[in-house]
Image 1 (cartoon, rainbow, N blue to C red):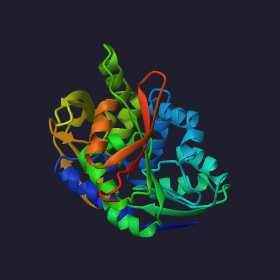
Image 2: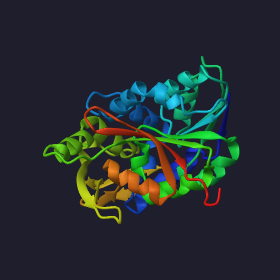
Image 3: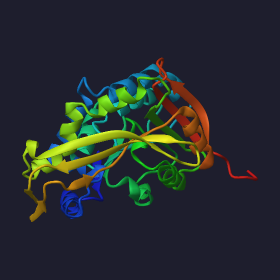
Length: 316
């Protein structure tokens, strides 16, 4: 088992300081340092934030059907691997069929270590990779094809749909597999309220303001705000969360050896999470040259798991 770090912790700290100076905090900066990884673990284990649990249950329910599509010896890449528990479910099933290499990838080095530790009892080779999703073309150098490329734990929804599918399409071949899950938007009177309530739970608030607290801000000196708003696209109107942190009191935070001054009333712009319908996901996949091999829906229709593959080039 080995780990390749394309991104150093001090790089993330520098980016945090630079972004805060411009009143921004992209979501990848939530994972900075040991407190970032521990905050993520607390969030995904909390009863108030059920998305991770529901998507894991969907994977468990359909694991044998998914494994039936995986050829012997196909390697597994998982981007945004987190603690690696959901991946272990998949890997345990696949290890019964053949030997292969597993590439857990995350922006957080501690989480890559944790994901590697999760599978130490399985008969497979592990190569951990620490780097940005946006650097897929570089990460791709370190894994051997063919692969099952995984985006699990609602990770797909944290990127612009055209951008994420375009990037993935450039690193996959026609015989590779693409496995990803999503927490859906569905038209019911209570849907919007439930989504906003989930993302406003105390555990998610603490995770989102975590980098500021680690850098010296007091909890009562800032306020996390989240709303679900429509986002028009050519594939129809989507919904996505809009997140900001409002500074309530003049503060100075320390990051990467710098002092960053934040004034009362200033707004720090953050990331987002899209909420799709299944039809919209189908449309985006077709648009970027993917065909759906299998689709698995939860009983309440609130979650979906896609197994897809690039369409063969014309003339093949």
